Image (cartoon, rainbow, N blue to C red; front, side, top):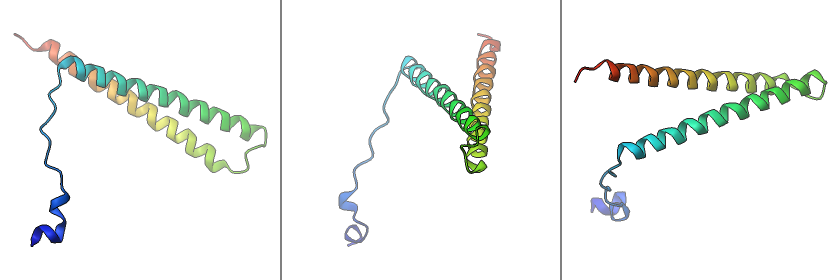
Length: 98
C-alpha cells in the first residue's frame, strides 16, 4: 500500500558507484578547471563590453554593468582560491614521508 502512495514502483534502484582511476579523476578535474577559466574569460569580456557601452552612453542601466563586474570578480576569486587549495594539497603530499 505504501508503494502506491509514494510511487515506489517507479523508483530506479541505486546504482553502484562508478570506479574511476586517478587518471580519469585528473582528467575530470582538468576539464572542470579549464571550463572555469574559460568562464572567467567570458565574464571579463562581457564586463568590458558593458563598460565600453556605458562609457559610450549606450547602456541605459548601470545595474547590468555592476552585476557583470561583480560576477567576473567573484569567479576570479573562486578560481584563485581553488588553485591555492590544490597547491596547498600538493605541498602537503610532498611533505609526507614514505
